[in-house]
Length: 253
Length: 253
DNA sequence: TAAGATTTGTTCGTATGTATC
DNA sequence: GGATACATACGAACAAATCTT
Image 1: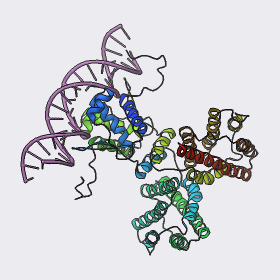
Image 2: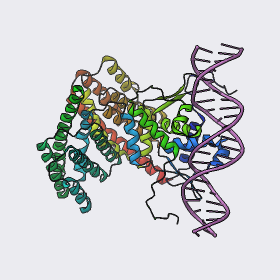
Image 3: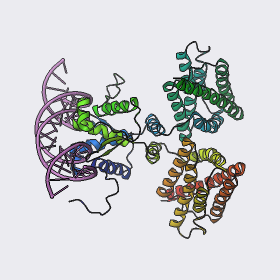
């Protein structure tokens, strides 16, 4: 019946995908913003001439991408939804799940981006923002007494970077720095990249975050950049040692 | 207006979402790789105790994220699917669709990342790879005669950067450079950032891509970095002028 | 507090489409 | 061509959530 073409080789797109695309176009054409209401199920069934199940599958596709949200009840329905940075990070992490990203790969970018970020923020932060960073930097004042504490300290240290990124005004730079911090957090937890205890590096790392806050407060961009660059180099060194130890651990078993 | 405000009410997760999460866990636990087969619909219905419709919605969720692919027919079913870079770029672009990313934002990162990429690739490319880049750099040897040609030249020029990124061995750096090139391509087409013709900048841009290929061939990392840095600065300048003109165009109307 | 209205959520039965043998 | 094993799609019925009165 429906065989208009002699080129069947392209992967056939299922009806829910086609409907999802049409809804996307519909939203873009009307330039609908976050919160705008979409037609309800009944209207879409009539509009697209498909069954309820198909409409629902289309909505799940859009929901999975963070483009719509759905609520039940009167006044409910489907609405245009802004993609959150959390969801964007998760979706991007799925990609790198298949890419064998190494600690070195991440740090090549961190070393380029984070010193620049620090420099642009010098003298631009409010007292509250600086205090928030100070709190994260000084939350632990003693070297870890257990592997669990070591892991927690590591995660808070990454939160410091993620929080700093939050204060930037370049959305792309903010996102990338936060994404890398999250990816390293996942590695820390999942691959246990925290066990080899190194007190000296921990002390220096903590100290440099404190000094960085001081430089930011003083508005010294050059100093902020320098501190962050050195901090990145030490952090990379530490994580690579840990990764090497983890590898040896795997091979020993 | 509405909103009981009594409790933070985290949204209930629908059954399809819960099933999708369980399938994800199921795959991760077993460390299944791309191409591995998932249970068929009937088995999942039994496994999770839900109806066919719910299972299908769950599969659409995973499909939308690029995590599974589905085929009909005997031997068909659902399979673990590697997230492609294309899909990852699209999903990430959805996020920045809501973020008002400016040309300056993108170039702040391009100026940091692309010179570094060029430096790491100096002397590492095969003859075929260098020829491919050379072809992209020299495809047009005359300034554009029409707006359409100007647009095409601009897109090919961005393909050059995307292609160069492809040859890198840091998946994160590769992805970011390619993502920015794609984003700029979309801007070029959608916002028509190509019309203001500037012959001098075009000639210099073309020339620097050719010189870059030479430096890469010669294995001169420092020179490759320098050329790319200057190229980025000129490109930013050009795109910002165009954006300013587009803005004036909008305001004039 | 309770009932009713509105909208999505879920199930089931059936039929159709598609790819392999 | 026919049998088989899958996903795809439809429609009717009922369940659950949530807002209004």
